[in-house]
Each structure stands twice: as C-alpha cells, then as structure tokens.
Length: 191
Image 1 (cartoon, helix red, strand yellow):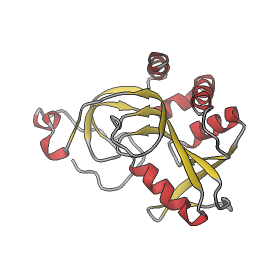
Image 2 (image 1 turned 90 degrees about the horizontal axis):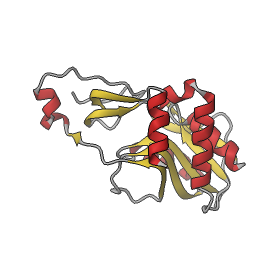
Image 3 (image 1 turned 180 degrees about the horizontal axis):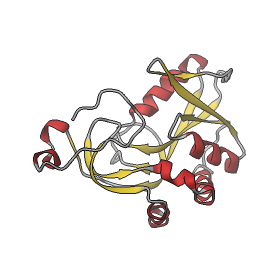
Image 4 (image 1 turned 120 degrees about the horizontal axis):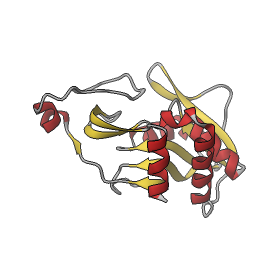
C-alpha cells in the first residue's frame, strides 16, 4: 500500500526533494507536502478511504484533526468511516477546540494528521481536547516519519525512515543548499 500512496503523492507533486525545515524544526532532504493532494479531490477521497480501512479494527466515535494540514484528510477519513468529524485550530499560538465543538467524557477519539515526524502536533491536539476527558484510541496519518519512536498507536498509509538532521549538525546547511520551510507553522524555525 505504501507504494500506492507514494505514487499518489508524486502524482500530486506532494513529494519534494531539496533542503527543508520541517514543522518539528529538524532539517531533511525530503518533504511531504500533503496539501498538494487536496487539489485533487479524487486522490484525497482515495486516501481517506484507505485510512478509514486502516482504522476498521479500531472502535471509535469521532475523528479530531489539527488545522490546517489535516482538516481535509480528517474529513475524508470520517466520511468513509461514517464517523463524526471535528478539528482543533490555533488561537494565539495554542491548539484549541473551538466553534462550539465539544466531546463527551469517554468519547473514543482518533486523531488524524497528514504527516507525523515528532508527534508534536498530536500532543498539542490531545492537550486541546483533554478537558473533555475523551479516550484517544488511535492516531491515523498519511505519512508516518516517526520511525516507531512514539507511544501512540499509529495507523499510517505510509511509514518511512527519512534522514533528518538537527539544524546545528546539518550537512545540507554546510553544503550551502538553500533552506526552504514549506509547512504552515510559523513559530520557532531553527535554521
């Protein structure tokens, strides 16, 4: 399945090669720009269906996705899983559940993300909903870059083991390759 997902990402020009500052602050020679997928509703729908199938063995009530990047894939996954769909968004730099959305205590939640590298946004999403005391039963994503170094039950369409570098020890920086930050997060870029 990973090859199919990679082909869809490449078809949508969502796989970039160069020198990138990831949302995590780490540097890499590959970047997955899943937002490019959203230009093509048919591709996005296919990936949402595949992700819903990946989650078919998980009992859950609601999907929660962090804005901006995961809102559309969260919606498509929820649509295909026939589940409720919510999103959290940043206000004053902090992820929050807004727009009148609420969760019930014990409600079984799956968090959907587009790409996971350090799981920082997953932690922020969990923090945003914790006051409601839901049960987070799984995390789903298109691309998992964590190399299995997370405590979450991640259901991914594609798992890769990319090379990433700390900004102060990046050979791409030493080679003078221009650094690009294509993500949506605007804070703390270590370049």
